[in-house]
Image (cartoon, rainbow, N blue to C red; front, side, top):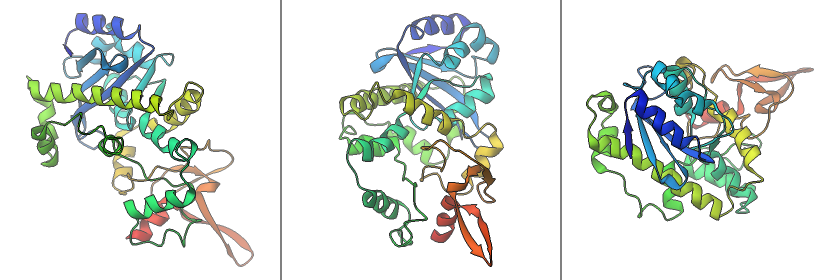
Length: 309
């Protein structure tokens, strides 16, 4: 990998990356998306992770990122950005460098879409995933209407294990222990240790391998890229402010894909009193109260999470 801390290094890296059909992107930092979140590194690789550039977000300020062409690269929707759950990448880069990532395809979304469309998974399997993975204390099958359109999300490590790729790539146990001990503040130390920089760069290799594997398995296809990009954009841009991310995180609903992501919202929207998202009517339950049809104040996702509690 190449560690970039100056405008000259940023410009040289951006020149290489701008010539790529797509790039692979990931970031590291202190409690990304939380109240005390800070961006430390933005890692971007060429296809197959043949070349990896690690941008130091402490040294590479907004003006340096702009002058070096990095913000233009991130905003260029014609250069695909491959991410895994890119919501925090999007938010922290937006807050740090003032640029909204465009043209992203989120592999976490691609994995979910592939379940029924490519792997032929039944709706019963979708419900079983939810029950086995999070809602074990809830009668998911008996309340299937409430769970309509809800999907359990998979973390990158779990996906690697499912595909049998976890043995090929093992993460540094020292850094994993650091994360487990909630010491992500170590990402903000300067000089940053080679161990942490290498750990961050390795995630680009993991994402590159996953992207290649998804293509081999037809989980991602050229014809499906526009739809995947559209859905990924809705997913990644959920949070435009840190307070939105913090508030949503407090609701403990990260493990389920949010509503109004896979399907384009249409018609009138309503505000959920729990997650505070503005959602289409399909995301809510309606019930008769006398002769009046009343909408429940919580969206279906927040309602089923409250049932679990």
